[in-house]
Image (cartoon, rainbow, N blue to C red; front, side):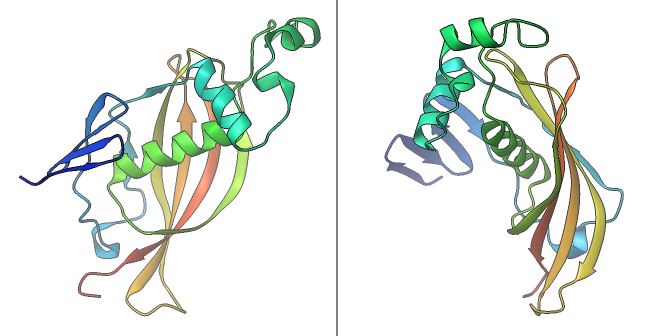
Length: 179
């Protein structure tokens, strides 16, 4: 096994330690030919979002909407259902987590070409744990990149209660075997 240190990330083979959390990356050997329409992937782990994650992400991305980091503001302006005065997790953070969880679940390493039909269907709050599932919905050989295929993954993020929080299609350029 190789060991290395890079910033706050330790690497031991395919096991990583980041921010004091140990996790194992899946095998990343999926090629275009290994995928098929209808194939499904589900994250085996979830990620709990904390209010501090939300505040930092919002401030780092210069999102100044107070619903993400000002509790007094949300108590006054978002007192009713479904918010009940709670901070709302930044949608871009939720989207990023679900993308990451779905990539980890599928083990497919490619180049994301885009997102289609992004819909936030239920609010996310601090303390919610997010999971992801994805299904291969379309596949075709790339017309502009020889040795690659274009794969669409219909992706859903959901919380610990099974409520869908975001849905979208992730379009990925996936290498073909031997390219």
